[in-house]
Length: 144
Image (cartoon, rainbow, N blue to C red; front, side, top):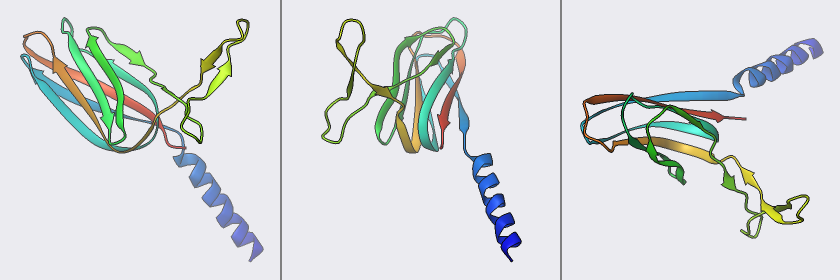
């Protein structure tokens, strides 16, 4: 009986490790002319990075948001770029956390990854009239 319980616990532990980690979702969005288009998926975890693949010769605005607020806003983008958005950490009283900045003894803010829970929406706006453009915006998050 003890062996069966031991094997069951090992199986649960292995399954937990196998399903935790970094995940990604690519939003494929097509715009025509000067237009705005969006896509949403349900994501739960900590935002790690956003990779924006922009159509050649196009200038766009990209906003990644969740029900908790804006996660990333890129006012103007015209080349493929990887972003690592962070937010200032807040303490229990709501004040921003700081750390001693080192040689200058100045206080520097502490930054952390943003939490996401629920629908995460990517909105792409073409800023210049052009042909139909395809975008791939990849949201990368950790769920552990």
